[in-house]
Image (cartoon, rainbow, N blue to C red; front, side):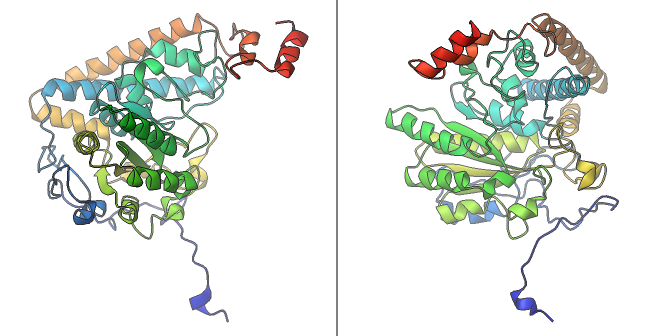
Length: 409
């Protein structure tokens, strides 16, 4: 019989397909009970924040506690508008992918507050290094929906000229760095950019996002090392949505401790935040940005959430988790929570919300019709063939010139 002391431990999710999910085992602090430190706090003295949970909205939809950002109602309504548009946009794009009108898509259902609040809390000049589920942040930055769609269907107006997968957006005008399919690269890129900004005497910060699964890769640790050594003005967001493409967060180390706790070993300020609470995400990002701008170093934020949809259109989550498990997630739906908070404040109604959903749906439909007028994936027109040889080298190499000549373009 094998010695149990020498047997390898392989962590497994608590629930598998066919099980009834029950999240009562989670130890969730009450809204408002987590203290808010000064932005110049010593990371060693605020370690508890990496194990708790910053929450603002309580079960009665009231904003409570030190972390309440006390945002004006118009800002909350704008945030709600961005999140609703993001969700409707996602739904439409998924349908188009299923109809064969684009090759690939990734929804952000249940994570809209992470991207929208995380971007709205920053200055427009701050640089964003996103992953591929932050489309809500690009919408919050004001990116034209038609342009986003043209990229996704790879038509003649795709600003990436067909060189990237759908949802791998880029926009210099919106300080939105090109999304990389090689997960994790955006963390050291963000830190490097922030170091350069600091060296130039600038006041901008860099904010980047990865999933909890990616935190197990080397790029995460390299970024944390450089960020702490050089006090790079960076916000490092780890979106713990419970699942990588098919593996639970426990495989990345979530069974042993929180992902925010990884900040402690690097001497970085670590926050664990309710990612489904718009106000909490906004407040935590605002705090981290002020800390970075003040020269007090980076912040690692674990955004605690749940990926409600498949990882991508290439994924079938019914193979590895219970159907509709997200409906049991105790932190609720970010849109519903912000909507109910606004209603409680007397700044919103169910009728206004229904009207908003109708308006956003019409906007998405109209935008797609315009995008399709510039070409479709199957029927074109697509980006000109000669563009594949451009922007590769500063001076085109002989073999690329020969290949272009052979094609006659």
